[in-house]
Structures are given as structure tokens and as C-alpha cells.
Image 1 (spheres, rainbow over the protein chains, first blue to last red):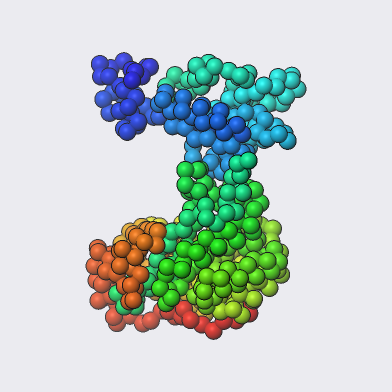
Image 2 (tube, each protein chain N blue to C red):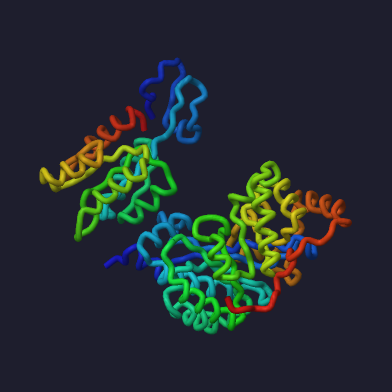
Length: 155
Length: 290
């Protein structure tokens, strides 16, 4: 449990409390738990990301396919989408997901994970306003720090 | 090798089925008129939620295959139902417009599970603007020859428009909750619902109101002549065993609905002198070709 950043009041804001009571009544800050979507065709890796981010206080969903991620995006609102660039052996479905998010004008930060750093690929992804690139393999803490900076420092 | 998500959906045993009653409000004490079978995806997956499940299926363009899997799951679940109860099943228009494959499958599965086709109402759902209408109409005609009734789902929204009403000539118009929610307080919604009731009556069809969330809206619908109602307010979708435990699947299939009954009864008392709404109870019209 930790005190939330940005809360100046004398009360103590605990993640465990906020998870059950998203609108924090004891201080003037309106704090909501961020929901993130992790998209990776490696189920084991996706699950380990989910476990890690859940312990940090995020609400986490995982999708293994492009279409599953698109269906989830149609029904839930996410603060951050973390997607692998390569979602199948056949192609770079992560880019299609980024395009989909931007076409829908969703207010969602997009973090792309990739082991491929071809300049053309990166520049195409950037043209779709990717918020952050993280090279795979990466440490969980590094990924969490990037997500935290995108969400303004709170889980 | 672990099956893909889509492959999982094609195994009917991975799907679960809930049933939501459609009540006949005017008849004996809110009689259960029919049960709509509602599919849930595999437990522990994102697709357990029906809206996410079918969004995924449509994105995969796998409606026809998954509709078959869903029907097999429904037939299996329905074996525990009393034989006097009707069953509504959702089928994509694109599935029916994709040749005779689904109709043949429906017949074979119903036979396998000793489910009388005359108990079935196929609810047409559609999200795709491109559709082989001739194939669809051919499938509907085949279904009607078998005694299956047709409902058009989400009337007034998306592709469930006037053209679909004309082409499908449904026995039931299912009014979407968008038009029903807040009906009492919104004259525009009342006007639309009134016109759809009149249209259904003129076509010899019945209206089913979905998504009623308040006693006020329910009372308004009843006063407008709608007598088939499906709503969480009355009874949410439940597994068969829960419906049975709630006494909804007994011989008389009637159930006092606390609170709601009071609102309805008070309306009925005041409405005895009102003329009968045209077409409001015509739920057994002769089957006809579209």
C-alpha cells in the first residue's frame, strides 16, 4: 500500500481502499483506478504482465488476438493499451490495433512493445501517434514506469 | 497444441446458455410466453460477456460457424425445459443469407435433441449492411415451412430497419431498449413506439418490448397495447436451474412479480373500459411466405 502521488491532504490514500471506492472522499482529488489492456499473442507473457500490473493497483485485461482486443475496446474504456507489434506469426497486427484506436479517436495512450526496431516500422507506428516504444525484452519495472508516466503517476 | 479462441467457440460444450423469460402480461398472471436463449462464452475468458463475444465473432467473420455452435449448445440446454415452452434463438441474418447450411443444421440438431421446430422462434440479428437477401428469404421460407416463427431483433436500430421488416415479415417485432427506456417521460419515444405497434398490428405481427427498467415504462407499454415484455425488471437471464428454482418453469409457468404486479394491476383496473389495441395479442397468426 502506498500514498497516492499528488494528494496533499492529511488523509492517507490507500490503493486497497481506492479499488473499492474509486472516488476518494477524504481529499479533493478525484482518483480513479486506471484500466489497461495488454495485447500479446504470448499467453504466458501476457499473464505475467497482468499479474504484475494488478499488484500495482491497475485493472488489467489481456487479449491474445487483434480481434479480441478490438472487441474489448468497443466495450471498455482503457487508459493505456500495451501491445506487442507482432500479434501473429504472419504479420504486425499491433500496428492495425494502433490504427484502430486512432480511427475511433479513443482517449487511450498506446505503448508498443517490440523486438523489431526497423526505422520504417517505428516511423509508421509513430505516424499513428504511438505514445511510447519499449524494446523487448524489457524489465517489468521499466514497463511500469513508462505506464505510470502515461497515466500521470497513478495506478 | 492449445486451441485458438475461435476454435474454442466452435465447441458447443465450451458455451453456456442462460434463458430470459418473455412474459405475456395480459394473460393469466404474467405467463411465461417464451424463453430467449442467451449465450455466454467460455468461462474465465473475455468472451464470457455476450457483447464482447459476438463483437469478436463478427470481427472474425465467423458468424455462421459460431451460430451453429450456439444452436447446438441451446438444444442441449433446452432438453431440460418443459415441452410447452417456446424458445427464442438468435441467428445472424448473414448466417441465414449464406445458403441453406444453417437451416439443415438446425433441423438435424433439433431432431437429435427431440426439440419440436414449432417451439422455436428465430430472432434475426444483423450488424452487416451487406447481405444476400434472396438467400435470407429462402432460409426464412424453409424455416416457416417447419413451423418456426421469425422475430426481428433490435427493430429501429442499425440494419433492423423498414427494409428488413418488409423483407422478413416477422411474426414478432422486438423493440430495442433504446426506444423503451424512459418511454413514459419522452414523447418522441412514445411516438416511435406507437408507430411501431401500429405497423406490427397492420402486418399481423406482435410486439415484444425489451429492456424495460422501470414500472412507469412498463405501465406505459401495457397501456399502449404491448403485452409481450422481456426485461431484467421482471426477470434477468438465468441458467435453467435458477429459473426452475424460481418456479418459472412449472406447469402453469406463471409467477407473481412483486412490485411490478401492483403497478400492472392498478393499470388494468383503470383500463378495463379502454378498447382493445389492434394486433396486440396476435401471436399465433398463420405462417406465411415472405
